Amino acid sequence: MSSSHQDAMAYWQRLRKDKPSNLAIGGLVIGAFVTTLSLIALVFPHSDGAMHNRGSALYWLLMLPFVLWAWDLSTFSPRSVRTIRPAAIVLPVVSLLLLVIAYNSDKGVLDSSHDTDVELWLFAIAFIITVACSLLSVLALQRSLLQSEGPDRRLMKPSEIAQRAAASRQALRAPKTVPPGRERSRRKPHKAD
Image (tube, rainbow, N blue to C red):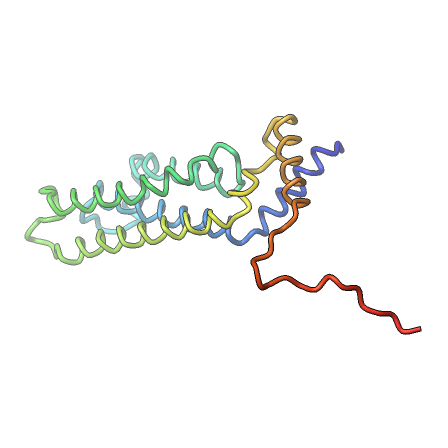
């Protein structure tokens, strides 16, 4: 096994254990899932149950992009990791758009024969959850290993791996600055003879 491949595997293991990276990805996946469910609820208004929806090909066509993206994101692939920030912006906008469509829709959501308050509250709750998850994702991403060192290196070119590994080693060797008043004494302890 080459040195760069060993570095990439070690980095992937560190990514898997990095709580802020996992929190950023998990929050975004939850927000995307709630938004996808809102879209499905708008497409299938007042169905008799979730099992009826799952039999439809349209249900699976709407769910498939989310599933593939979430799977790719869970592996920390470079392609999907680059979509974290844009997705954190787009998901709340889409969720708000779905809420507005649900409010103004004539095809079942505002039908007088059904309880509209419950459905509109569900869309509003979905919007709130999506916004909260997107904010959590962005805040966690700022402290994550993904932000400081980038996505999984197993899928990168060897030259990119070497460049990022060198930058990471330099960052570790750089002297850390200590705020004034917090300096520690650098005296060596005396040894008893």
